View: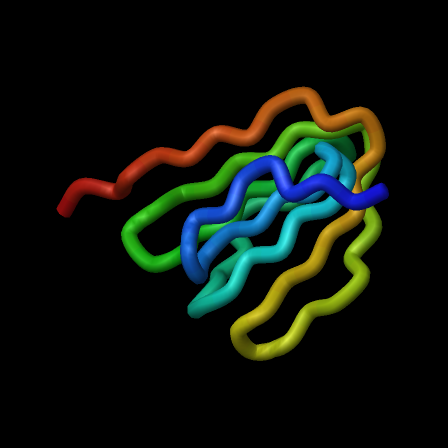
Amino acid sequence: MSKRLLQVMPLIEIENFQQIRIRGDLMLETIADHHMIFLHEDFRIKIEADSFHVKLLRDELLALEMKNLKKIELTRIED
């Protein structure tokens, strides 16, 4: 059963703490074993989990599966 936990229209969708979809202009800043950092519009998004699986990566869509999500941090980038 799918349960949408968070949706920030139309940017970020999180389902069951296992999947995240990010729409819009993305830039990968950092990728490591247990975290990823993306720049999206005026935000930095840091995702920490035991593991990641990229399901889809297109021009303006990223879909990730995560195992044992630890933290999602959304920080506004100031000019």
